Length: 73
Image: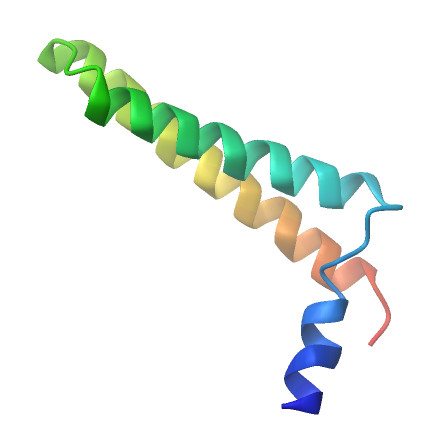
């Protein structure tokens, strides 16, 4: 359990910009997915919102990886 906490501590770095980018992209993808599900838009708009949410998830994963690599173990 201690090793897991040490690894997760590498992601909690509010002093780095990559941390805030990761949070922003993951939060935006959650908002887009909620809009696509709750608003019940037309099929085309739902597809666009879904694709934007997936792109945001990929961008959040990219920034999480950068944060993971950028921080010393």
